[in-house]
Image 1 (spheres, rainbow over the protein chains, first blue to last red):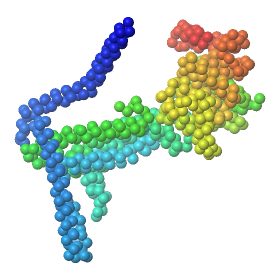
Image 2: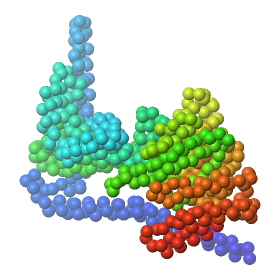
Image 3: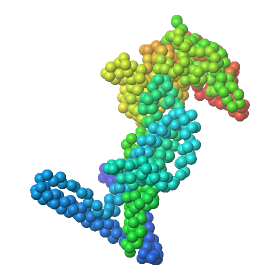
Image 4: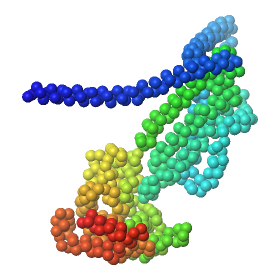
Length: 331
Length: 281
């Protein structure tokens, strides 16, 4: 009797495990296998198509040539870094010798002026997009809150926002360039002009979605919460800090994620157009270079740009999860 | 007893695209200190408008509200409101929600430790001290409403205004909350104005039931004194002839004298009203 019950129990346990195993398997399929299949099929189609496209710079790059170029780009980066260290070592040595000869000599440190590598360009682009984005947030969030709180201000500002929102930031680029070179004149600039140009372009692109989302978020705060604040007689500043800002964090983040995505796309184009350092310049330089490797190097850049754009969005999402109370909204 | 709150002949006219709409006409009511008054009437009759005028969230078109000899012109913590859908700040815990109110009202007069004690005391009063550090989305509807009541009580209001505080709760939770409220009321003896749809709730909790006529131009139809002895016991009252008489008075007012005629179909509204009667019975 007891043996049969234990047997049954065991069988039940086995079945349960079986069911659990199935559900785990299904999750694994959904999470890993299906995307993997998608990627493999894409790579196959890509390499097949690439083989058939002939250009004046050789065949269209397939996956394998991209992998080769990725490692070449990394090797170039390492080589360039070695050259730079060697340069600074030589310089130091020379300076030390001169100081030994002449104690009054003030040694000059000259910067290494080698070519920026692919990885330098990635860093430049990332710094540019982040600083432009932050500048936009500093302007747009307070402005959006003010517009959202004040209907008259909203009516006054809305036409301007609506007018400038659809303008491609690239149209601003020539104007930005001219204004920066006219206004930003200093013998020892803290940041290069080209950086400012790209950054301001990014800012102009980010501002509008952020202003609109913030103001909509603020304007649509639950009326009861506003009434709570009124009953408590919260002063204006405390009202913003305790009620308005937390309540509109989800909307603000939606605007931020939208604008960061667009900003990254626009930045690459701006760098190509204005020859400002960054990934866009890398792509343009390779195109102008026109060597047999150029297309595969550009393709590598394309994939890296896509991957960084994806990472930027993930970072914003994580940030939103940390900051926002509305866990349901963050997906 | 001394009159603490005087709702003095208020009219409320809202401008609409079709011209002015008179929601309230000559609503006149005096409330004594420590009195529990419920406002009952069909939906859309302007009960909430009366409450909002007392709260200061709306301004009466003519007439006014006088609290302790001073006219009410803006919202304030001495007329704390318990909103129908709790209105807790979703990003703050239960404790922080009450704390925000306490700090705002007593921030200058109470020390840090006193603020802490007062917040905890009020949460204990509504039996929510076990879930102080939970956020609104982690607790049930009844618990949220308790925290909302604790927040209002913590302001030590002259008049506590409750806008259908238990309207969104299921029947069992509602009964439980009513018992809690009676318990608190026995201890603190607040002056309360409560809006309700529920006839039993009105009779059980109130000293006076103010019945409002249907809008537009709604006003006070009848006032019923409830002289049932306190503490009141829900089960014992069910057999009480006085209680049942009061109940039927309110029901008569609502379903005979002020029968709500729905524009959609008369039969449907009649069905609904019978359904409502059985529901509250």
